[in-house]
Length: 606
Image (cartoon, rainbow, N blue to C red; front, side):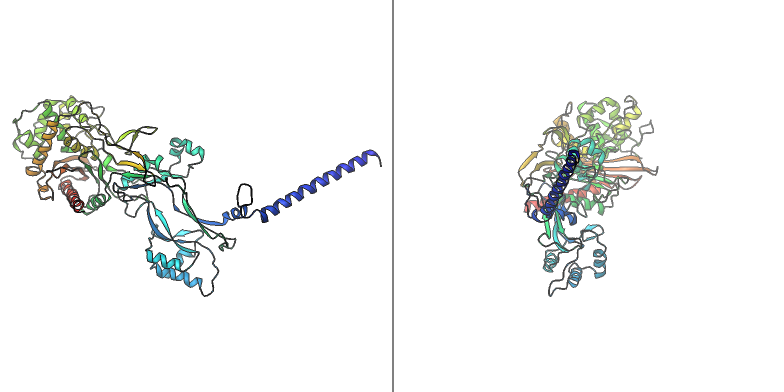
């Protein structure tokens, strides 16, 4: 055999040895993974055997980990914990003396449902589920939870979950809703998306406080429960059920609102009781403008959102025709500009005599002063006063009273410049862009809150706060602070004022508040004299077009109470009612103020 053949055979032998060595090492590695690696024997302390069964773990999120909202007293507005029934579709071994099938059937009697309904829920399950009715988890009593746990079943457990929204969610339009929004995630939360903290399918705030406070509401991970099973859906010994939750005493954060949940719920019920189909109520602390309650109707359930319906939109922040409540602005301008003398009188015969302009009282009010015209809401008096003022002056005073700008709290917060607490707050309008302010026909309509004039209920309520505070315009808060989970302060939002170009004089503001008492004593608000508190305010009726093209009205009342020692400013709006309907805002305002009176009495006793 020549040297070439020997060299070739040696090479083949070496290659075979190498192949054998590789196969041997591979088999040893497989043995290590299957036998030796269990119980955290890898250098990174990873239990490979345990992780290999995670794919067979049946898991369920108990708490998303998102931050929650509370009212001013710490009462939860979202995320209330509740006991619920968790069902895992697994096969259990029957323990001695314990009939598993019968035990499962006993669950039905414990939760007071027909056995057929319970079996119809359990049998088709492919994954873990929460016992629910009409799509909402059923809350268990402590007694029910104890009886279910005493059965010793691994497939049925009573556990604490957090349901973000209540079945009857208070302040739903204020809080808003969460949902998927891939476009906004990639545009507004780019860094978090690239870091993997948010996915395109992540649920984020899409309206209300859920949207504006999204950066602070994002948690650090969900709390979940998992039951580990083998391929036959039997619980794995030693693993069984595990609850996983982030262990951080600081997160998620809590957003503390200025709302009073008790007052809020009562006002929402009052809207239902009075059959208000469309409208809003705003109650502010008259001293600093803090929002005590804000209700919007029609009702809205954050768990079931139909964007096309639009009932998720907060009507308290939408600008609509104000009618005669705008006469407050016209009166302020007339007083400050001395366009009307102290005891000067005007004749109202029911019509101005041009522009087709009429008073709501067809036969006319007779002879009236400006003060009497305010109490009786006489259109003719205010049209004549506006003729002396002109459109520019009228608009200037509206701006000085912050009726042409968003009034809700805004400011620099940490690294966020110009942060606004309120979502989609509209700024109001006196004249449309193309309007001619020299047109006298437009002017007289503007003076009584018609034509192009638009005001939000929040602005209207804040107008009362401005008058009470001698012309200083507050910037209403809806959130007062953010706290860590352990209640340590994270961020506060201090009350502050807006700074219009030139506020109205304190004497003018005081005078208008006095005129509002006359409105209740002898004017259009006489029905409020039977309220539990002494009240003052201004009524308004605006002519609008309904969606069907028919003539309709917006009914308003703005005011304060109690008159002896004012505590609350409020604006109520009943929107888009048929023309000629009885004024619905006045009884609603009375109901709201009676709720506040009762609440104040209870607090003074406690």
